[in-house]
Length: 110
Image 1 (cartoon, one colour):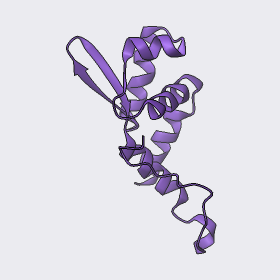
Image 2 (cartoon, helix red, strand yellow):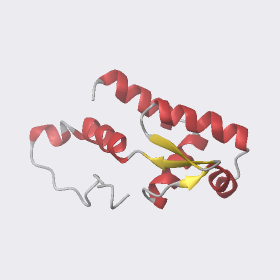
Image 3 (cartoon, helix red, strand yellow):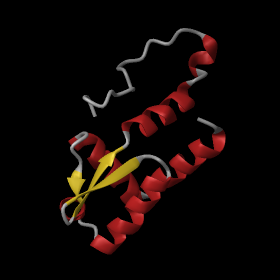
Image 4 (cartoon, rainbow, N blue to C red):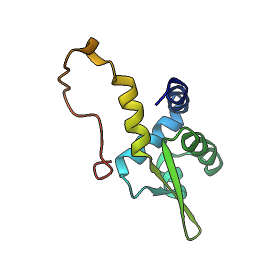
Protein backbone atom coordinates (compact mmCIF):
# COMPACT_ATOMS: atom_id res chain seq x y z
CA UNK A 1 0.00 0.00 0.00
CA UNK A 2 1.30 3.46 -0.81
CA UNK A 3 0.74 6.67 1.12
CA UNK A 4 -1.97 8.05 -1.19
CA UNK A 5 -4.02 4.83 -0.89
CA UNK A 6 -3.66 4.91 2.89
CA UNK A 7 -4.74 8.56 3.00
CA UNK A 8 -7.81 7.74 0.87
CA UNK A 9 -8.78 4.90 3.24
CA UNK A 10 -8.20 6.98 6.36
CA UNK A 11 -10.17 9.90 4.89
CA UNK A 12 -13.06 7.56 4.16
CA UNK A 13 -13.07 6.40 7.78
CA UNK A 14 -12.72 9.93 9.17
CA UNK A 15 -16.47 10.49 9.22
CA UNK A 16 -18.80 9.20 11.92
CA UNK A 17 -21.38 7.46 9.70
CA UNK A 18 -18.75 5.80 7.50
CA UNK A 19 -16.82 4.60 10.52
CA UNK A 20 -20.04 3.14 11.99
CA UNK A 21 -20.85 1.44 8.66
CA UNK A 22 -17.37 -0.05 8.41
CA UNK A 23 -17.32 -1.26 12.01
CA UNK A 24 -20.75 -2.84 11.64
CA UNK A 25 -19.71 -4.64 8.46
CA UNK A 26 -16.52 -5.91 10.11
CA UNK A 27 -18.63 -7.29 12.98
CA UNK A 28 -21.11 -9.14 10.75
CA UNK A 29 -18.34 -10.79 8.75
CA UNK A 30 -18.04 -11.81 5.11
CA UNK A 31 -21.76 -12.45 4.61
CA UNK A 32 -22.32 -8.70 4.89
CA UNK A 33 -25.66 -6.95 5.19
CA UNK A 34 -28.29 -5.79 2.72
CA UNK A 35 -28.30 -2.02 2.30
CA UNK A 36 -31.76 -1.65 3.82
CA UNK A 37 -30.87 -3.68 6.91
CA UNK A 38 -27.61 -1.75 7.33
CA UNK A 39 -29.42 1.60 7.04
CA UNK A 40 -32.06 0.48 9.53
CA UNK A 41 -29.54 -0.90 12.01
CA UNK A 42 -27.52 2.34 12.01
CA UNK A 43 -30.43 4.76 11.69
CA UNK A 44 -29.07 6.23 8.45
CA UNK A 45 -31.34 7.32 5.60
CA UNK A 46 -30.94 5.05 2.54
CA UNK A 47 -29.74 7.95 0.37
CA UNK A 48 -27.09 8.85 2.94
CA UNK A 49 -26.07 5.21 3.26
CA UNK A 50 -25.56 5.03 -0.50
CA UNK A 51 -23.34 8.13 -0.43
CA UNK A 52 -21.23 6.83 2.48
CA UNK A 53 -20.84 3.29 1.18
CA UNK A 54 -19.74 4.66 -2.19
CA UNK A 55 -16.87 6.45 -0.42
CA UNK A 56 -15.90 3.28 1.46
CA UNK A 57 -16.03 1.19 -1.72
CA UNK A 58 -13.89 3.78 -3.53
CA UNK A 59 -11.36 3.60 -0.68
CA UNK A 60 -11.16 -0.21 -0.95
CA UNK A 61 -12.62 -0.85 2.50
CA UNK A 62 -16.08 -2.12 1.53
CA UNK A 63 -17.33 -4.24 -1.33
CA UNK A 64 -20.82 -4.62 -2.72
CA UNK A 65 -22.58 -7.37 -4.58
CA UNK A 66 -26.06 -7.81 -5.99
CA UNK A 67 -28.29 -10.64 -4.86
CA UNK A 68 -31.52 -10.37 -6.78
CA UNK A 69 -32.78 -6.85 -6.23
CA UNK A 70 -30.71 -6.33 -3.08
CA UNK A 71 -27.28 -4.77 -2.69
CA UNK A 72 -25.22 -6.53 -0.05
CA UNK A 73 -22.31 -4.65 1.52
CA UNK A 74 -19.43 -6.33 3.32
CA UNK A 75 -16.12 -5.20 4.76
CA UNK A 76 -13.23 -5.72 2.36
CA UNK A 77 -10.96 -7.56 4.77
CA UNK A 78 -7.90 -7.41 2.50
CA UNK A 79 -8.21 -3.62 2.24
CA UNK A 80 -8.49 -3.33 6.01
CA UNK A 81 -5.50 -5.62 6.56
CA UNK A 82 -3.37 -3.70 4.04
CA UNK A 83 -4.20 -0.44 5.83
CA UNK A 84 -3.38 -1.92 9.24
CA UNK A 85 -0.13 -3.35 7.91
CA UNK A 86 0.80 -0.01 6.36
CA UNK A 87 0.08 1.81 9.63
CA UNK A 88 2.10 -0.63 11.73
CA UNK A 89 4.87 -1.49 9.28
CA UNK A 90 7.56 0.32 11.32
CA UNK A 91 6.00 -0.38 14.70
CA UNK A 92 8.20 -0.12 17.78
CA UNK A 93 11.13 1.44 15.96
CA UNK A 94 12.14 -1.84 14.35
CA UNK A 95 12.14 -3.75 17.63
CA UNK A 96 9.95 -6.85 17.99
CA UNK A 97 6.49 -5.91 19.17
CA UNK A 98 4.31 -8.01 21.39
CA UNK A 99 0.77 -7.00 20.51
CA UNK A 100 -1.92 -7.48 23.10
CA UNK A 101 -4.05 -9.14 20.43
CA UNK A 102 -3.57 -9.86 16.78
CA UNK A 103 -5.04 -7.06 14.64
CA UNK A 104 -5.01 -8.77 11.26
CA UNK A 105 -8.15 -10.74 10.37
CA UNK A 106 -8.56 -13.55 7.95
CA UNK A 107 -11.77 -13.61 5.88
CA UNK A 108 -13.12 -16.32 8.20
CA UNK A 109 -12.60 -14.12 11.29
CA UNK A 110 -14.06 -10.88 9.92
